[in-house]
Length: 120
View 1 (tube, rainbow, N blue to C red):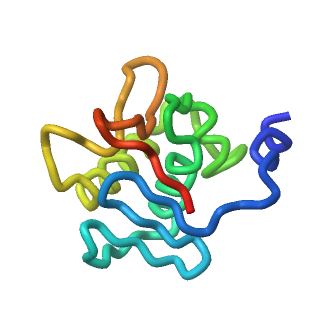
View 2 (cartoon, rainbow, N blue to C red):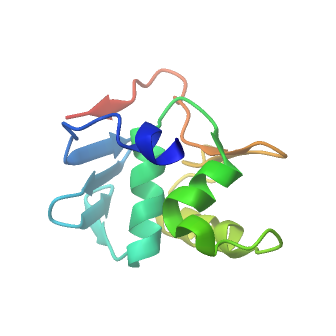
């Protein structure tokens, strides 16, 4: 069922943006404030999934299932580590982090005050 929910958008956008972050999924190019940022494949998958689900907190289990499928162990800190790596590369303003954590729920890219999430 989760796999079907992930596939609900067949016509996917190739350029995703949030604030100063731009991810071109087709060419695998990510920029922050116009500067290129190198992401590992898992970091790119994580960022893409969060960008495609902007405006909501994505449960940890959903992210783990999307990124690793059945390979995920219940006690693994792998997701938290990848989120930390992506944050280190994306966050230009410590007072307005790109990725929000809701303890006990998950992670998300929420709308920043006065800014609309954009997808081209």
